[in-house]
Length: 202
Image (tube, rainbow, N blue to C red):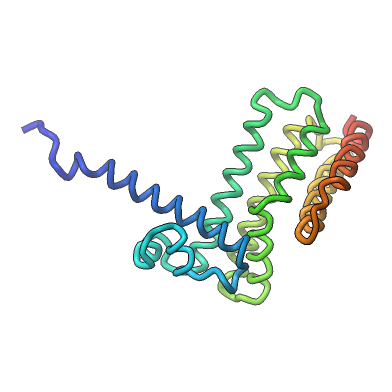
């Protein structure tokens, strides 16, 4: 009486294992999507890369659409957290650093994976609504973080559009980076945008 049952003792480690398996699947899904695109990224391929059985993968994510939308959402949240962690006490007026960090969000494997997901969603009926909802949520969160880090006052006319223009520009740089290493030009564009923001957000 009052003791801890075997089931209770085992529950936490089992939950930890389940959480670790889920995370491996999500990370493997993003890597596969970035490297192989939608067509080459099956549940079996992701499960093999994650080191788990197909059955285990389907236990966590019953459908392929569940797996890939969850994967992109997971990494998007991780990237948002990483962006905040770069400026734990705010950007302290260093808008060029903020612009560069925002651009980095669109030039890594997450953006490449998301792009493959967008293309698939454009002609996959089951995927389209999920991806549209996901992108709207990620877009709102990225915009909110950008406003916060840039110290932008969106009550002023044109400021919201200026911040959104920055994010649209960053997405365009991410697209340009898919085919060639665009880092040299990107640095010049980042510097110019930071200078424009100094005038546009005052």
